[in-house]
View 1 (cartoon, rainbow, N blue to C red):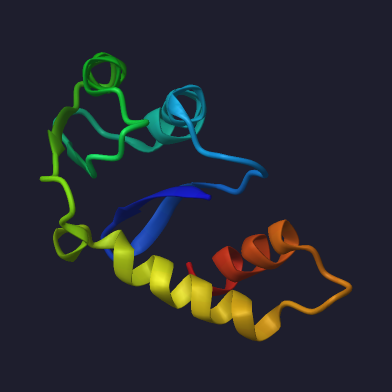
View 2 (cartoon, rainbow, N blue to C red):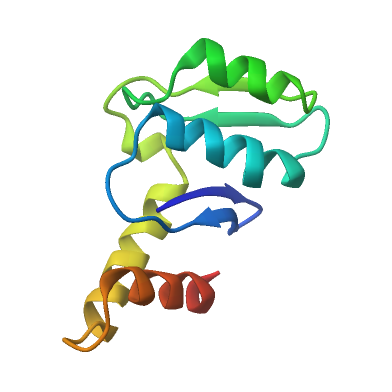
Amino acid sequence: MISGWWRGSTIAPMVFEGYCNTELVCEWIEQLLLPELLPGQIIIIDNASFHPKERIKKLLAKAGCEVLFLPAYSPDLNKIEKFWARLKNYVSQIINDSENLVDAVSKAFRHLS
């Protein structure tokens, strides 16, 4: 799952199966995040290895946005981390054997956002 966080709620959520990688992050930015952005916004992104800094800067510059990358190992500075904790807790409460994880995460996004 990938999502942005703005004004206390998620934006451009994307639930996927498999692993997150550079191509997936860039696809998410181009297809889901860019349409949500306003020129002049500052986008804060963590320092995950699959976040290609220069490529992300170029993509977000198309929307007139600036990018700031958080220092490595600083989840306390990343506001969406609290949402991820709530989402994981909610999913663990609602998932059952007949429901797959992707469906449960999608349901949690709708409930918590």
